[in-house]
Length: 113
Ligand SMILES: [Zn+2]
Image 1 (cartoon, rainbow, N blue to C red):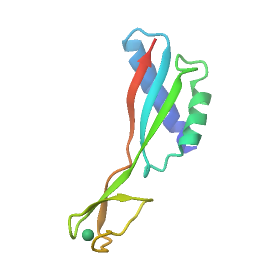
Image 2: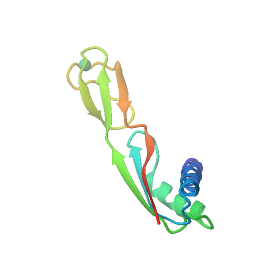
Image 3: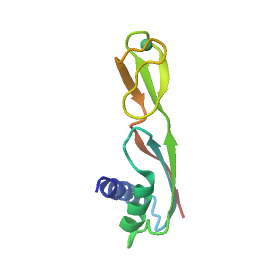
């Protein structure tokens, strides 16, 4: 499962950060997930709590903020919000568009106890 490996790498990064700070408990993790990342946030939350068992991350609150996808048009330079993975430019109809944001997965903040 895709989300399970993501959840495990997030936990790995958080555990490493907590040990650098000499913390034994993580109370909250804030994630930023792009809408075009393909990550199902509900599934990620579920995998996260399963993978966190028996780690210092167990019981931590997972806050997921979804960010909108943004595309740009190579033909006219227009920037526009994107729904889904591909979109035609709303101003000139070109399909030569690039997704400039929306695929990211970032750990925005970690709250340690
Ligand atoms: Zn355009």
